[in-house]
Length: 263
Image (tube, rainbow, N blue to C red):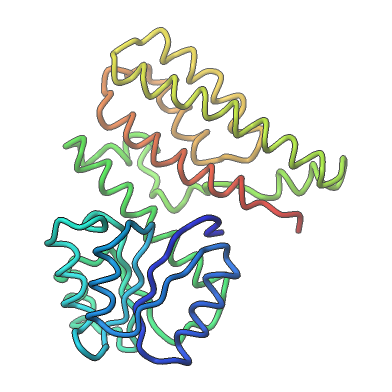
């Protein structure tokens, strides 16, 4: 679920460190641990990470101060996704976390590996969608693309499609199918994004047509829904929000496809 992701975990409680590290590594992430706030700031200043998980209550420097320091600095993680960890999740705590610059909050104790991973992915997806909206200046782009449906109502990936293929042909052949689909989809997404940015409607229309056929066939529901809307409406000239949003949807789709395992 978090395959290949580099995570900085800032947590001072040894038991919590063991639990969170085990969960993250089980989900495929590589983990660096900082045991207090000052160490976390120093570590975050040395090299980039894909995700910072910061406990709010830590000695030396609070988690909120760590997040503010990272966000306001010029270090390699100023723009990295930051998720706060805390045992107290009331309105005041949520407001304080948001004001610090965190992208989201996960409450402790961490009880489920899959649930923990899903919470992380949901926060990261929400952050990318917000970034796409801000970059485009169009706050209605998500509703426009999905015909007014909430983003969460459209699955990124329907694993039952691959499960069905696996029962018929075997898991090894499905892995080959996924590898081919990832290659083909990435080419067409790149072609579509470039065409949208350049205002090339004919190329965008052709790429969208190919994507519609492929995405639905492998269970990539959200990508399929978005591209179908673009194709049927033919409004390719709305290129800033479309290219940014489609790239964010493709990122999530690629992660889900790579993480598929037979049920």
